[in-house]
Amino acid sequence: MNYSKLLSLFNNTDKAKLLLDGNWGLERETQRVAPSGSLALTEHPAAFGDKLENPYITTDFSESQLELITPPFKKVKETYQYLKKLQIKAEREIGSELLWPLSMPPKLPEEEKIPVARFKDTREGREKEIYRKGLALRYGKKMQMISGIHFNFSLGERILDFLYENSDKSMNKIDFINTIYFSAARNYLRYRWLLIYLFGASPSIDQTYYTVLCRELKTVMECCPECCGTIDRYEQYATSLRLSRIGYSNTSKNKSYAFYNSLQGYITGLRKLLATESRNFRKLGMYRDGEQIQLNYNVLQKESEFYSSIRLKQTTGKGESQVDALEKRGVKYLEVRILDLNPFEKTGISLEQLYFMQVFMLFCLFEESKPITQQEQVKMDKNHHLAAISGRKPGLKLYGYDGVKIELSDWSSEIFEGLMKVAALMDRAVDENIYMNVVEEQYKKVISPELLPSARIIREMLEKGEGFLKFGVRRAYENKQIKCKQVIVKQIEDRMVQV
Image (cartoon, rainbow, N blue to C red):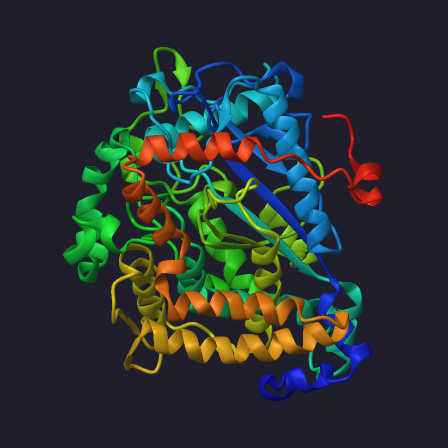
């Protein structure tokens, strides 16, 4: 595909409408907490039914960690409204408890008292529980209590057909679809630092997480020496501790971005991690006090332990693995896993942010996307961690992929030029300035870093004399007071099942 000419295909209004052809879904993780901000140690509310059977409200790692999941919708506004309705239902059923509004955990008890999610005594239930015990053993329960939002994105059949018809047809359509999804994923990895900067909202932690902070400092020093000058005063410059080395990470030292150069490379790489035994995990043992505590000794117990910032996915049938589904039917959608919870939004994410993500993912699709080299991977990872730990540092320089360092603000401005081109075409499709307005609003954060959610969190804490815990509790109460709009899209009502 000629990426430099690709956008010109959408210059007229009818073709521009194809840019909105797709499906979008959300998965929001959140902790149940007591009014004091301490982790709730109560059982998963019975009103939500069996965790294995409710597809919309279930648990993630912990019994105290809810996961709210929307179906895919053809309009991001419908996805947002559905998530908001799930949030209202969850708040109603947890009574006096609150939904923690931040990605970094609330006040946590000692490790052994954090409750791993419990499931009914079936083969599937036992496997899920043992898998979570393995995560606790490998990485610690406190790290597993970090929460975020996953954004699921797929292109619709009409735009896929249009792109294929305008390609050179040197490959069959399935291979072509796989190619463009991997192309978008590579550019997402190259430019993900911008999302960390714009939407990072975890610049602070509770003191009960300090044990993890101290444990991970050695890793930070090894993987990103550039970050060490600011790690001891992280609140001054950090945007997202969740996305830093002291946050949610595991396989970064094991994975290679050669995974993202082709479907076969991705499948081969994952299967290797799933089949390769780890000496460190073997030392942890398989049983303790007569109970199994890991599924296996491999680098990954299951595919879901692959904590990359983006995953390529296919829907699976009963008993089918994700890797097998990808091999049989190719890529169906991308799972973006880099978004922090925004404490200033009831659902943890705003509708405007979802509009921006639409533009960003299309920008990643339309930019030229060469295979990732090992040298480029190193720079991509450094940029990720610099943006997470030092993103608000004035004059911060990132590693340009052409070998020259560049200031974050200058590089951001270059990327925003491309984003605005995509947004202008999308606005032509809706005959409004929705997308351009959203992109321009986000660009203000580049010009004025004080507008960043990470900066706003620290500023409010200082102005109100609040620590991390008090800030989170106050935001949780304020968010709970926001009521769901009375007018809900009928399609959502039709698709909403009893939860």
